[in-house]
Image (cartoon, rainbow, N blue to C red; front, side, top):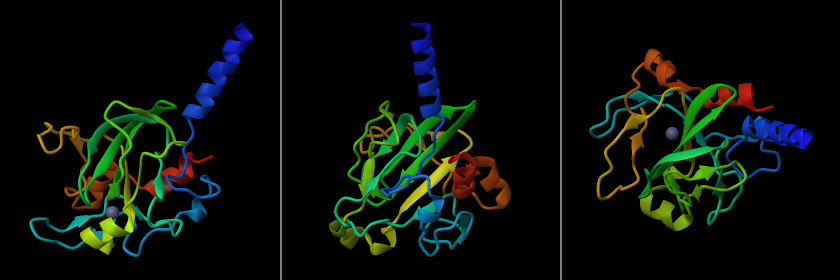
Length: 200
Ligand SMILES: [Zn+2]
């Protein structure tokens, strides 16, 4: 009996500490399979636009890995708990809290659709949480959103009071308030470096 408990404890520990790529590819541990969009690198300067000053890109923009324009799935990169969902239009997003190996971190998935999870749901890397926008949604929102934006946060996102239109939006990220490398490194991991370190 003790032995069985040890085995179970060991298995759950080793499953917990695994990180995977968030897209559907044959080997979700093969980082070379991750393709970014043209201006999708971490830390790039993003030009100012209406009401948004120039800022640094706080995540990476991941390309659709297959030519699936109806249901291209997005998975969490690790086990965790959903803490916020914004379920509308091109800025829809999910924020997940993770903890393993004494490391606490948060991930954000944005420009997504078909959200399958709710706040307080426990998620794992084998089950899709959303999908890339489909053709109809891209025609409506613009093809610049033909990717999804992934962030890996070092600190807890900013708490928000949910409003009627977004009843499950309890947090927002620091996406638009990083103006220099100091801000960026304070709040964020470079997702590619994070994968290199934690995907084993
Ligand atoms: Zn982005």
